[in-house]
Image (tube, rainbow, N blue to C red; front, side, top):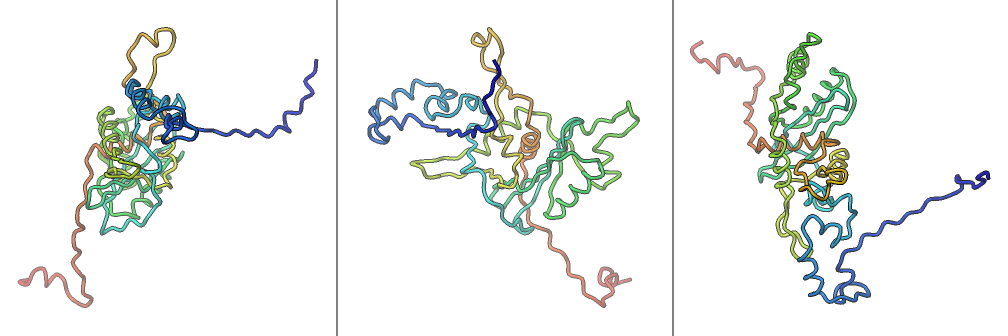
Length: 287
């Protein structure tokens, strides 16, 4: 029998609803039927990893999120001007053969707060990469720049120096190798995301914020999860403590930047230059 149904005329409409256990509370919910004290007892019996799904009604595939404190309503903010007097900006670059170049720019203020202010996620030639990085660097008062450790390895098979060295020699971009401590870098991001919320109000703000224009990093943060065992043995094994090694290039940049503990420092005062004055005589009065 031929299928004569016209699927092209179907307009797909899907509504997604998230509801937490408080919705069922007599005191705080809408048409609730459970006492608040009973809900609290139920929550106490649920593990931390399961609370996102069972208590807060989040999708199950988000339960294993690495950055459980990540909250776009708190951490993502509108862009603002990064003035040289008020911020020092640090840069990290992650490179792979089969993925776009991933770059991140992190501003630090005098209070130690960090702001992801710019990003790069694009397939480029080496020359195009250098040009784009320089253009972004020129917008800020730059501190250190770091690159993934693999970029410091010479490509002997094709008779080429390392990418790190080529960027320095051919394009004037100086990088130092970033950390290989992946777990420590992830833990540093987790610490920077921490905040304290009491009664719906933020009592202690996080150390880290992300400009809303950094769409690729936000996308990665939303989806970064721990790896899982597969097959019949899944239930018999402890959960893995390593994230899935995928879609984490800008996250690696962020971790390496935070790992070096970037700091703010006051700009060095520039000595004024007076027209018509022989400066060599000023510097050496006995000349």
